[in-house]
Amino acid sequence: MSNRGARVLRALARVAVLALAGLVAGPVAALTLGYIELEDDDRYEEAYLDLRLPAKALGRPFAAAEVAVKEGRFALKQVGDRIELERVDLREPEDLPAALDRLYAEGVRFILLDLPHSLVARAADQLRGRDALLFNLTATEDDLRRSCQAGLVHIAPSQAMLNDALAQYLVSRKWRKLLLLTGPSAADAVLRKSFDRSAKRFGLKIVAEKPFVLGKDPRQRAGNNVALLTGGPDQDVVVVLDATGEFARDVPYQVQRPRPVAGSAGLVADWWHWAWERHGAPQLNNRVSRKTGHLMRGQDWSAWAAVKLVVEAVLRTGSTDPSQLQAYIRGDQLVLDGFKGYPLNLRPWSNQLRQPIFLTTGNAVVARAPLAGFLHPQSDLDTLGLDEREVRCEDGGGG
Image 1 (cartoon, rainbow, N blue to C red):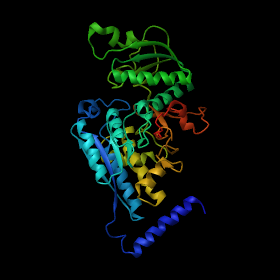
Image 2: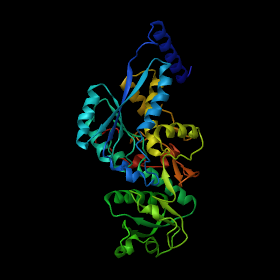
Image 3: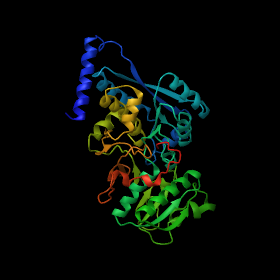
Image 4: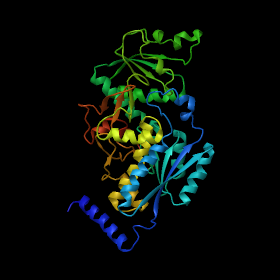
């Protein structure tokens, strides 16, 4: 008998035992997932959301987690288990330690984090060495994947994964000569460093780099006028790297030469898009959009996928014991269906969820990376993002 068949039989046996005991219809212990977000998170300011910028959230993703909980309750009911979601809205970043301690004291061992990267790192440090598993839903910074935190799982892709997907597409189109437009902020610099790694990895050539300035001040035309910025050496494509996306949205169709725009506008890498129409995606899009009130984006997919991952672990192990669930989630038996056409699991060296990345425009998915011809000896999904040789854990943290 296969391992899968044995697990199914064990699950059916649990149902039979509970039924004989008269417990299936009665109250059962619930597996509670924590969900922490920041009340004054700049990423969700109403004015910012109204810009509807590419690859940025259109609203908070908590409702997408609720969709997954509803789906999970039906499946878990069949084996006598329940799942609940406890939402914690931090009024100040300084409230995070107390919130984590309270959830942990209440027995919550799985906590979803919709937080900026600095708070994700702080949460992982606080719970380091404890039997808890944190899920990073929305922070894409590469340095989090190099942190070697065994208790931190990254559902959101890294910037390296997003940039690698874009680089693969540019190479596939033979658009190798790039003009970069880069912003002045610290976040822009982080994005620029990540993109430089992808350009070198896939053999793209940066023929020129121009710094941009947000605004319309005529005294700064050299930095805010797209036509002036895109002069100089010829290029195959203009890549704009703008962490907020406010400048980038005005770049397409304003460049000096008739060239495609990519990066933070034009052709944009995202880990979900409402226009994806394969592998059951339309049904998921509809369920999430009805609940959230906005079109589904990558942040929503992360919240949904994190809950589904835990539910899958319960069903496959036949247990709600946190240690067994965590071992399954981090092990090589995990196979998560994320409606992307690939079976998904974690990279053991970074706890990053392997997943395809979509190359998108405003209303379409142009391609799905990894693209044909980009191969990896372990998994073609590992052509996206930090490979094992790029993550060195000095403390043996298992990240």
